[in-house]
Each structure stands twice: as C-alpha cells, then as structure tokens.
Length: 327
Image (cartoon, rainbow, N blue to C red; front, top):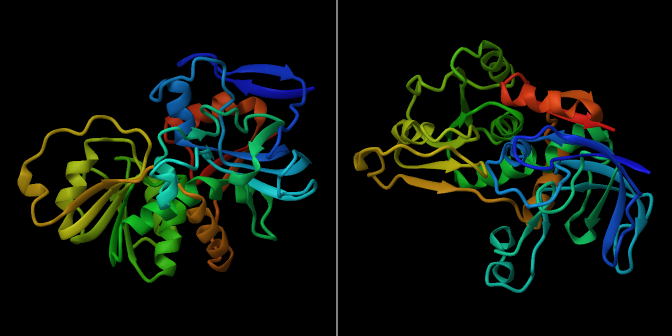
C-alpha cells in the first residue's frame, strides 16, 4: 500500500489515505517520491482559488523521486532519478503546442491539480514531462527547482534585459531568482510583506542591494519588476516603480483583483504581462544552468504528515526559502 494526502474539496483539511501502489500505463513512470516542495499554488488548490477538479486530488508538483517502473515507450529507466513539475500533460496538436507555447495549451493538465501529485509516497507521471536532475544535488534541495526555479526562470526571461530588477514577494521563487539575477550582473531590489524583517534580512543576505516593505516607494527607478506575491494591489505600485519602457511581470497562477489605476502609470510604453506555467524547454534550460550558479537553496523539511501545518506556515508567510515534504 501507499500513503498519500488528498484534498476532497476547497477549504477542507487534507485527508490521509492508503491506496494500492499505482501501476504506470504506456508512456508513464511509477516514481517513489523522495521529496516534494510546497508551493503557493498548492494553497490555491486547497483554498479553492483554482477550480477544484471535482474529485479528491493529491496536491504537490515539485517532486523528486526514483523511477520504480516504466510503462511501454517510456524513456526514463527504472532506477533513474527524475523531477516532476507543474505541467503534466499537453495535447501536442493545438496552435500553442505546435508553436513552442505548450504552456498555453487549453487542454493542458497539471500535476497536483488535475493529476495526482507528490504529497504521497508514490506518484505516476507522464514520462515526457519528467526531467533528469543535476547530479550531486540531493532530493530535498532539488525539489524547489521544479517550480520555484522553473517559473522564476521563465519570469526572469520575460523581464528582459533589466539591469535594476524589483522582486515583489520574497519566497521560494524570489530567493532563487535573486541569485540567478545577481549571477547575471543585475541589481536586485526586494519588496517584502510590511513588517517582515526576517524576509528583508534574508534578501539582503542573498545579495539584494535593498530590501524593504512592498508598500514603500522603490529606492531607484526599476527597469523591470516581477510579482511573486499574489496581491493585485501591488501591480499599480510596480508600474509606478518601473521606468518608461519597463516591464512588470505577474508570475503567479492566481492573484487578487487588480485595482483601477490612472493610465499615466502604464503610459510611456510600460509593459504589464503575465507568465503562465512553463514549457519543457524552460526546464531544459534552467536545469542545465542551475548547477553552474552555486545556488544557495534555502529549505526547511517536514514529514508528509505535517503537510497541513506546513501549508498554514506558508499561508502566514512564515517560510524562509522553500518548505519541502519528505515521505
């Protein structure tokens, strides 16, 4: 038998279950979960910010594990170590899939949302959407790369060649993006939850030139800003902080409503855009780059049974870096 935690309906506590160890179908992998990082998107699933799939679902989409069995046609062999990300399946035929934009596939299915995820001892995943991981990186520290790292990387690319970069919300993704940006020679400014001196100190420790409350004016004019905090009110603030021609990137899958703001804050060829999901090309790029950067991946580990309490810590802004569940 295999243990897992499932979300029956939005707002309900996670329920512990035991089920038979699943078998992989054609093109699928059965994976023994070694670690699964906890993401804010997991909160959006269990809190009902994203539509519930209508059946009990096992959350978790930053999964590292070992392949136990491979279905016909799968490329990863038993014994290999893989990562399983948020994007779990696409149709491969629509205009988005055939133009390198599979992240926008309208039929896409996502790990830990429509597909059972990694809050479990075992997971079945589509072999095509699993990735070999950098050698020498243990499972706990590799897990946050599968979403915080990958979505952060895509958001950083969307920000363009910004020299002065603002990061709004300094959690799992921002603490990795800040280091990548610093490695690229950018100046990074961190905007944290007002009153969160711990997050501000953490950001400065990772090389940010300034760290302060998100309701404070930016200390310099920014070339771009990335919003990881799911707070719509920060969008106008970020637009006011960037220079003419600057870009504001909304990196989350869910955000509270954006309040109205004067057109003058957008004018000057400022760009407001979102980042949706990830592509396999993003994963190939970032997972090849990550081992060369000397990233400091800050993690706190918790047993699988403590997932509910860990989500509560994340909801309250009490996690520095990334939280990781270990079955």
